[in-house]
Length: 337
Image (tube, rainbow, N blue to C red):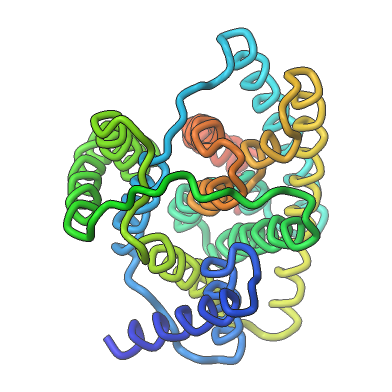
């Protein structure tokens, strides 16, 4: 309990400092970097993993309350999905090649090169002798992507979202939506539905907004607290290692993150140009990051969170389907490992 409290306080301090400094993605990025820094300094930090479904439910509610279902027509959506598939087909082999050249086994490379779906890949990585490589690579990628988007916002390359509505739900009403979203998420999770708590939150809160007849805001503090806890959870995934090994893993994570992001930007540019959509909006949908972080960034930039959540959930489904095949294929390639 003391460790959990320490981690939460460190996250709150980091998020609060970033917010005070006016840094974009403040609560998420500040908490994540401070807790990750504490790990690298050798401090013992941790948060219970069972917090994640509640955080996802809160994020889903925040998205659902301002959900815009005006997605492109079927033809445009088909083009965008085709772009996502081509993006994945380019990212995964390239990431595997780079990691294998750095000395990773084929199984490690298969998991570490996966563009996103951190929780799914981390769970599969437990089958490996040394899962820390995969977990650290995926975590570094999320940190790098959030930092990249935040830098773009600081440089005013993308707009910040205006306040979407003046109506704010009360604390009891917001908590009731979160509780319903969590319960629905538990049911969907038993049915093996990807991103179950986020989807449940979107559906519950979207239904509420439709019943009220206008977009609304959750109670003040819901998003900051959720982002602090999410950032602290992400930062605490790092584990101290010998300096040389840690440096090598950080370089590997950054290298795969850079290559995957550039591939995403290439396909996002083509799809955005063809569909006449903002390239940054399409890139957020294609970006190889955790779904929670990318949806939050879509919220704060005002770039169609409904568009982003659709593509990320689709990608989680696809990665979940092909992940087992990748592991089996890599195992066949290395029968002695």
